[in-house]
Amino acid sequence: MTGKGLYADEDGKVVVRDFPIPQPPDGEILIQVLYSGVNPSDMRIIQFFNCRRRVLGNEFCGRVLESPGLAETSFKVGDIVAGYVDGKMNRPLRYGTHQPYISVPPAWIYRVPDNLPQADAAAITIAVQTANDALFNRLHIPLPDATTAPTEGTLVIWGGATSVGMAAIQLARASRIRSIVVTASTKRHDYLKTIGATHCFDYGDGNVAEKVKAVVQANGGAIRGFDAVGTADSQSLLTSALPTHNDILLTSVLLQTDERFQVTLGARHLDVAFDLPGGQSLFFAAQPAEADRMWKALAWVVDHYGAEFKALPVRQFQGTAEDALEEIIKVGAMKAFGKLVLKHPLE
Image: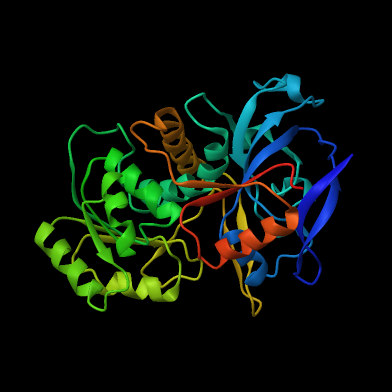
């Protein structure tokens, strides 16, 4: 039995291929993918990091199937679970989530409660975990419910309408950040204010840096900056929008960062390595304590999804694998609002 998946071949061309049901090795369980989440990194890792011979996709919602090692876990056949996978360059084909069946370690998944729609479950893990690393590890903001007092100072999020940015806004609000300043397209401002932004500015405004700086200066207190876009331009704009201060922390989703920025990752429970063009390599060792903090924050989001944490904008695609590939390319070019998920099996 086979099913259609999206695959980057040895030349870096993304094609449709049929894949069989994987045989789970010891320590892994078999999952039928119901939905897979699409991220800009699905294409970027092929374009910029020369990843080849891999099934695309890094997050999912699915159904647990019978597996030899299932009895050693807390999961049972039929459980609806979500999670994300190891994104390393030479990962096994069975880890790519844009295919109908995957095999993963149980430590990478969690049960999906009734309050969390299955499509949304496939969409939130990477965005939320990336925001978790930025806020709670790199910027040292307290976890949701860890404090009852307002957190003084200002958080500036460059790219508030990205999936990561929207997650960060809500998490910052839950952590009682008093001032949450974001940049985004003007048409997204009203929505971003409903989820917690206190000030919104148009990133296309030629004076946006000066306007953000004026608000930050007026607020006073500690300054925390998060580049959720991940380009050299967004980093430069964010730094130019912040006044000189003795308590500034900056982080970015861009791996090759300005030295003033710490690198934000979507996972800290695994070693993460990238080979960059030109022969440079990046390596980030697993950080168990930071990973634990991120999982706690994710659990808060899952428990409060649809209430204290408002549902993220999610778009579902159902159709042919060829058309799904076109949608993934659009996401890679940052040309879509909200999170795209693919319904499986693809036609």
